[in-house]
Image 1 (cartoon, rainbow, N blue to C red):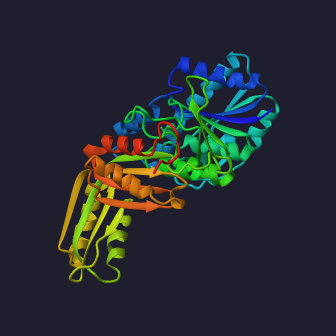
Image 2 (cartoon, rainbow, N blue to C red):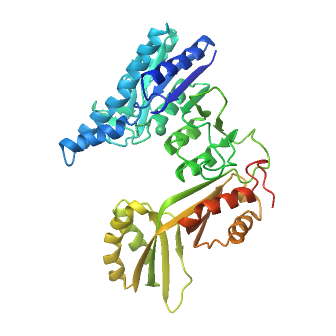
Image 3 (cartoon, rainbow, N blue to C red):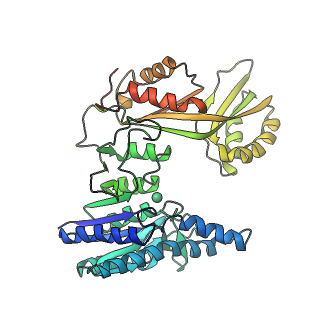
Length: 410
Ligand code: ASP
Ligand code: MG
């Protein structure tokens, strides 16, 4: 007998028939002798609809009320799933986040989980019942409802698996698993059997949307093995876990791309201590995340500083940046939309030579210009023109033979 946490996303519980099917899946795990706790997202696009509804009655809905409103989406689907399970002959109880014992840090929208007091869920499972927990929510020390931020149900599931010391946390979704690259971009994309937490974190942060980055962090922290798989069939998906028993020799495991980038160049920045700090603290103050940063080599006492941000943050960034640029005596600020970041990710990148060269060669062979390069221990990213992104991703995928053998062929 294993303890299993199963999480079902919005599409998987999108309508009554799908909820009925989810109940059958949960029931199958119960029949197999396991203790099961299920975590659900809100049905379909409920969260978006609730946000739109809030904005139709108030221009700026208060965060506290918004949290209360949004938390209802997951409460609906959890109660319905418990009903469907009961109807199919399985004893089940639904719980809101607060009832499940999730203690949050007091941020109404986008809270972190401080503690998971899982006694009630433990007791429910011990009585042989299925526990169905509403994802994406908890309660702070004042008893206020908090949500965990968009996509937060994944984190609820992994945190619950950690609290229950579950054998596995299964994340059921509408894709078959984690792919070497977005299958909509590259037909030869291959589903990975496994991936390390660090690699998944890079891919998730770079925009592979199957698993929320905070859920991956939580899994790494508590050693929860996460199985990302489809709720529409029974084929195995992708295991996210520690590196120990993984395929040896995998250098590049996957590719991510992000097309929602904009580039900003500050030209002729006087070369003095404190200038970069002044620029980037102003941008951080506006709540904007800066991604790739490059500073050119000093020439005539001046540098050029280039960086990228999410295109949605462009106007906000320029508004704070322009006065700062004048103040520090920079000559000009340019910006450009239509850039994309292509990244290769793999735990072995740091320990193998020739990986960066192989990526650059693949892009060069297609005549694709690289504007900015940045690297981490397990990632190499190149900024290119957005309109070349599909060709770039295909070329790099081919170069590292990701469709067949996952090993690097330099
Ligand atoms: N329902 C929430 C959202 O749409 C949380 C989740 O689905 O994970 O963001
Ligand atoms: Mg999701």
